[in-house]
Image (cartoon, rainbow, N blue to C red; front, side):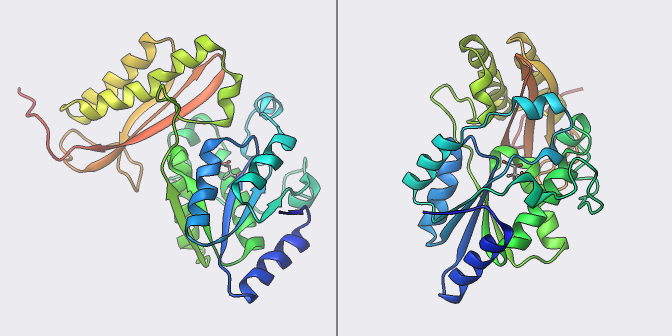
Length: 288
Ligand code: PAF
């Protein structure tokens, strides 16, 4: 496994792979690797890509300094996991390499209007500008590639798809299924900060989604159901929404489409998110 840290080496490595006729598969991460990240690597390898895994804790997507400071960092473990999973190049750029002006504001920002302002964006102002800006840079340096993102960060996936389309990147975005533990909890680097009791309460997010999927009610009922399930379990709810899968706008009770249910909340000050497809085409008739 190659270990790269400069933009010049990273760009040259990817260009060299393409010259050899290989397809580059980029797996962007913020480190603290877990099975979810490794499943993205596996998918890229199954596609025959040369896997480049970037690991960079991007300060521009954290609106809260304390959250950034608390973000888990496990570089030695990550290295072993990446190598074991068959990553070809592990890229760990320094902060000064990615954002030379930091902490002064970087003058150029990529902003995906509206899609980045809803849901997670509403509770974390500037978060998706930080994500869109860093992803633009990762894709620019990597060059033509397939880029793998987890569906757990569903809104991020929608934002990235949109920026790739709008800015005409020569990139195929591949959305991969959420990996879960045996309790249904979506795998996340943040889960390590939960106590045993916190983990137990956090399972309310996936339970709320499952019950919302099983319900035959309209979106308003399913929102209320998810909200209640999480509150009863002791989750401080940020949102429980049923939205259009592409525009992320809330669905009305009349819309009979395949949408997306998204939930977010805090357990022990850890922000957790999860989501699931929700089919509203066949459902019970609500009376009067
Ligand atoms: O999903 C993440 O880990 C990050 O948001 C990403 C895509 C690597 C950008 O920093």
